[in-house]
Amino acid sequence: TRSTRPQRMLKAVQKNATRGDPLSVISAIDRFCRHSEWAMNVGDEKGTILDSVVSEVNPAMALELGTYCGYSTVRIARLLPPGARLVTLEFNGDYAAIARQVIEWAGLEDMVQLVEGASGDWIPRMKEHFGVKTFDFIFLDHWKDRYLPDIKLLEECGLLRKGTVVLADNVICPGTPDYLEYIRNSPSYESNYFRSHLEYTKAEDGLEKSVYVG
Ligand SMILES: O=C(NCCc1nnc(-c2ccc3[nH]cnc3c2)[nH]1)c1cc(-c2ccc(F)cc2)cc(O)c1O
Ligand SMILES: [Mg+2]
Image (cartoon, rainbow, N blue to C red; front, side, top):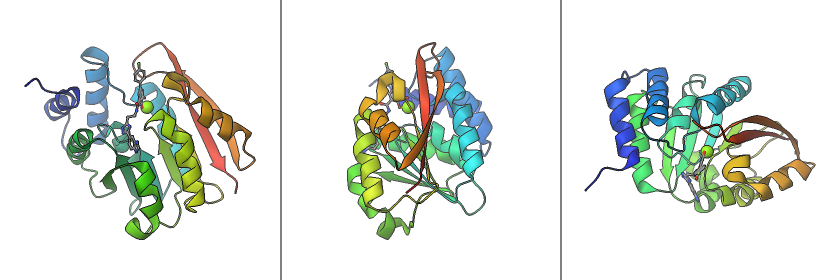
């Protein structure tokens, strides 16, 4: 049967990127998505905003919801300080299998814990299962209707601390109106919108950066 888009993306990484070189993995995926087949990675334009926020936070403990093929996982993990950890959650087993190989090709498997399952099931288990106290940085890039329930769940599970930075992708396209309304009106967060474009297109999209103030 015909290969899937994530499988073709992985082939492009293995063909065009150098093992152990995260930047070559990132550019191989961006080239594939610009010149061969669009895919829902955060992309290069929003990716530079992601990079600047991760570098500013310099997290020891980071969480990503929505691994997909591991593009943003590699973008984040390559910037982490030694000993830091990134837990990334993927719902779809096929995506997870590709992401593991992309992360390994980048040589970042030691910093990354990829977990397969639903955010609603795993968030309540983060503390006892991963020995997480609180997260320093969280990247929301999973199903858009899960952003709001999951940020509330993260609060309830005591996984946020004063200063935790939450960065949300796709707040315009596909859009997360209920999440935006909540986070921008909540006294527990200071939010800023970083205007950009939907990956590899001219359509508007952006990232919402929110700092938890407790
Ligand atoms: O759906 C998206 N991303 C989500 C993938 C995912 N990968 N893993 C999950 C997961 C992970 C744990 C979960 N736990 C519960 N649900 C879960 C879902 N979700 C997405 C879609 C678009 C997009 C824009 C315009 C279009 F015309 C079509 C598409 C752009 C983007 O940047 C996206 O991120
Ligand atoms: Mg996205």
